[in-house]
Length: 411
Image: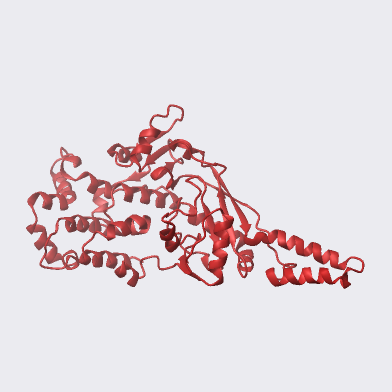
């Protein structure tokens, strides 16, 4: 990952946590019912998730109590606007934006000497079967301060009232209680520590529950797409819910998404776009072995591209150029079928969210499409960073350079 880190493309916006902040973070973990970290310094993202703590815990989702009960931690106002690097839901970043938009000023004050535990409560204690994800409707975002600070504030105010009653101002015991409380927690009398719960409504979304599920509920008919085959097999046994159920690898899924006006593919338009060029070059790169030139140069230089295109096997060559070959044949006759000429995954990779979709829905469908056919390296980085990082580890060094260049040119 060194090249990505040098290019500021690998978790570059994490916030450093050390000293007192580690102590507060551990108090949050304990308050939420999790094991405390033994690390003395680490980094966190916008929702309070830390890659270092996840590695220590050997649990990437260590802030969850099962799939149905995710949590978050706010320990610094710097978390405002920061990425959520391993979202459990596609709407996690939106929820955090809602939190800071509503309670931003109070968060600035509270995190001076405390920290905030967040419970994303969808009123589901536990998932039992895959279609339980249909219960997702709205989320109550609840807050809790470490050290039970809200109660400490109430106790301080009671002590102050007691101090002002009768002749208690000369009572040394009350003096000491006030001093001890102020020394431990500070003067809380004038501070607003009340964070009222927030409501967040969900529509279509992705969740990592059950191995990854897309819930598309804002279209012609409710559609659920499973990434995990076993969860899919369990879900299709259902006879109660009126819902279309697919596994992400089913070719019928793409046709259904087109029928429901969720995605589209205009090949004559798409071949003129940078998206197509990236995908075509990605396909060629998969066939290149023991090259005399760096792969980055081959993909960037049109002369070298043609040279190596002619060096690979004729079947592979046709696969790289299949879309253009199909369009050429189509000009002569409409008898040709795309499935006979263009590789299915190549064709699927050229689909786009339908132009009528809202921006939120477009992002979700981009993520779904890149998971169906992960051939556009830029979109894979944008919409599924964890999968991008896994794929990146398997690539040739020179191909990595080309990918990094594509991403940096589009920031």
